[in-house]
View 1 (cartoon, rainbow, N blue to C red):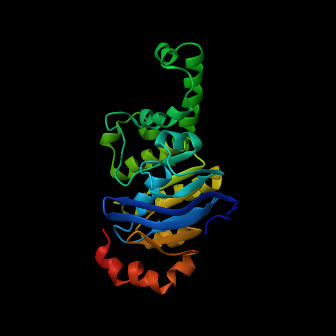
View 2 (cartoon, rainbow, N blue to C red):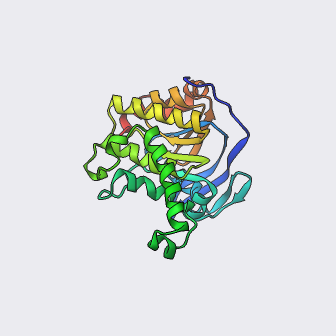
View 3 (cartoon, helix red, strand yellow):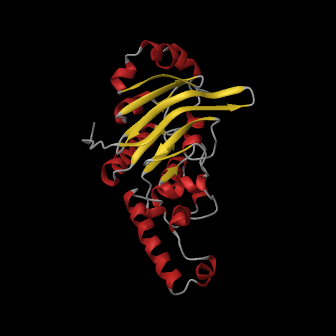
Length: 267
């Protein structure tokens, strides 16, 4: 790998999580743990339950069984706003930006959980609120510099190419200064050059900020290159977990995902 990882203690534990929608089981007794500063990948065929797992971690879905422990705090149900305040940020499979707003303003929305002045002061943009906004703006400008998107900081994101929109969405998540960053198919729809750029930024986020990253990704080359550990889901059940080499050589994984069946199912 490009960087020497300084792996720490467990930051996230998923214990016996089960999630069902009506009679359909999306997740069945899923358990795994993620350590501080890791790049941890969740892989599996379409419909395996990968996005459902991320949705449970950051509170969009509430599992019927099991618990999630983040930074020592164990819970089953949490609201997304609470997860964000605890230090969990998220990007989505389908870009969820404000298309009419500029790159700068979109990334500024990532600071909402850090803003403490009430709406009265924010409306006045005077005194304490003005000082707070300047502090938030400094953080956002550092994110913009880090992602090398200074040239589009005033550009409405709806006019940007797909790859740059993905980078802006990453920037909005980074603006929250998360301890845990959840990335749902960050390379989806990208060409080779855009994928290479995104891989570099993910590794840089992990290396320079020390951010723990959990990502879903279909590109096995990307997964094997940048991940420290991998968990494999199939039809809502865990098939395997371990290092990329261990997962790559697991016959059950080969049959379900890395072999011919994956080629047929891949988007």
